[in-house]
Length: 162
Image 1 (tube, rainbow, N blue to C red):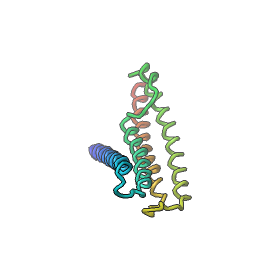
Image 2: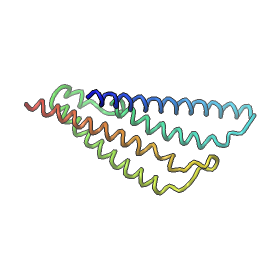
Image 3: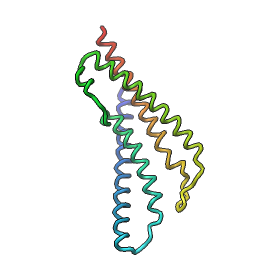
């Protein structure tokens, strides 16, 4: 169990560092873009490529971070109504299964997208496949944590049955 806690902490720290780093990159680039518009000292024609790559990665890695910590947006009035009862655990179990199904399709079709992507970015010649890589990677992380939630809630249902 100690190994799983260390892995969990490592995954959370990695996602957090990635998200903070990407946020700093985006803030810096957007600030630089505003500055260069007022004081055109140099060209940043490559700006769009890095912003697109950073924003895409931030979106999906940020979603994975929030998913793992149960801090993503959700409607939880039923969970709150049934708090601490078997109904809550059954509801959370069903929600986790539906979430896992969604994640399966997200990962599956993002891999299709990556396989079909043949374009390269114009300035840095970064393969567009790299722009989409954060989707299946974050989806796999979300899937692992969804399985964890299914197991945890399944155990709680079983415990409340006896």
